[in-house]
Length: 347
Image (cartoon, rainbow, N blue to C red):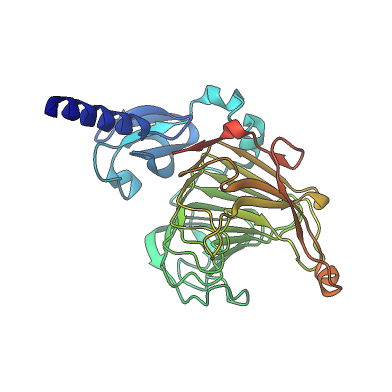
């Protein structure tokens, strides 16, 4: 009997280890911890980790699959380096290659530093800046929308390797045009992690990085006609929402576009009262669109949380007259919610 129980325990442990993948869904391992990897192309998003937990970084050429390259590691076993194969971009579970290539960030050169501002709280940044994993922060007044932004990114700004301290996130990072945030970590989100304010045709790119404990949302989208693109991003703790198109902005309109590939939600998606919330919300009456592939949600079950909710947005003037933004419910494979049930997996 003891032998039987032992065998069952071993089998269970093996099943759990097999279930907890050492690479994100759709990725392939290119080398293991301690080895030297090589990737082709200008830049490639590489995942480093194990057991369904990963750190993402955009790399090119040869690099060491190690903590030295990625800044940290997942404890408990050997980590692996993995990438999404080029051929997968044509599959049903990937965002179209032409769409991705049109909005991916340009190659980052460490010799190209910011022309304006610095990696300090309150800075206005223009140009490219590697913050060297510095930690910054000011204060947090929870859901006070009148807080000052922690950083403001002007047109063309590109920041990487930045940590925002818990209790110091304020109104997060404001993007006023085309901008890129690479390997930015929010230790504890205050009002929002980042807000897109850019106008028509502009893109806020979020490559790698993570955010923890966003009571309301991680990404706020205000700029009409703009796009937020997120790849290889992780959330931890409880978040209210991953992304929301503004439901009641002054002169509210659209369309706003959200594109996400390889996002992992490592905790509950819930309202402050603990009830289940939704991952994305858009305004279908303004033509907003969310395109999502390879989304992993811890403990996901059908409609818990809802993934893509279509709503009817309003303006401030309409709100003053008594109108309210109305959620229409969860939708799949529509002109607005471009996401299939097969694009979402539980772990």
